[in-house]
Length: 103
Image (cartoon, rainbow, N blue to C red; front, side, top):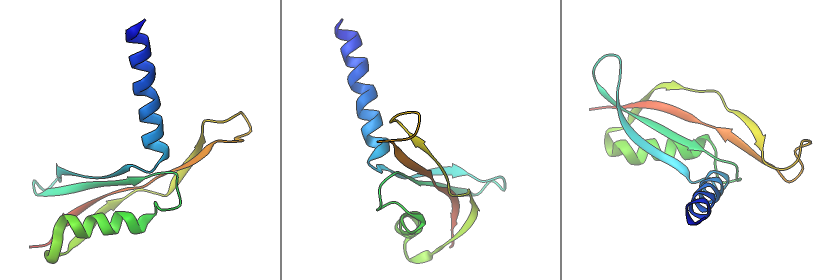
């Protein structure tokens, strides 16, 4: 019974984080050229998440050197939660891009 409650709590926390726009992350990755780059994810469902958040995170990641966008996905989204008609659901936008810091 305790395991079920813990799993339910973790699932609820994950849902709240996704709906709250907490997905503003930058993760180092390797580009096809072998150079290092960063995968930036600024997906979310609240009004504060936009492409501007991705560009801000890219600037913070690379600092004064600047960056170039290697790839960027579309601004797709879907309603999650709520009813079949989407009432009381959240519109989650998927925004991510890959950047390379200039040197």
